[in-house]
Length: 193
Image (tube, rainbow, N blue to C red; front, top):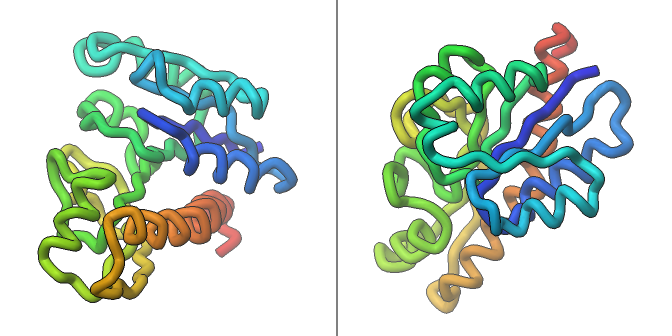
């Protein structure tokens, strides 16, 4: 059984989409959802989906091996950041080399880096009159949004699109591609490419 662990900070719509995608997939499961916010809506989603969920604070994540220990106990084949906003510390990256991925709501390297998430990204895209945006699925390294790109998908932007419209278009790409790319990565670990 291939095991996915999801890290999320907020609403958890991507975490839910990934979880439901794999409900009927043979040999792959979402083993747990972890969050850094005790009030995150993703905790309600995890409970409804009957997926174990864990909350951790900044100290446990960044200044100790507590989260590394928890992750090791969960034995993930892949760790998926789905709207997770904290920078992943080196001890976690080193413990799971090449097995941590993130989704970013823009076409990296554009609109990446510290503070560039969610509506901040969509506002920057709108402000700069971009004609397209999209998603980037990438490996996580020690720098924000700088890991090797796994997959990008694009969508056009109309001048009439507001921030919510842009966000909606990007969310549709996330829901369509993220679970499939995770599945492809897990299958390639088996050598079934």
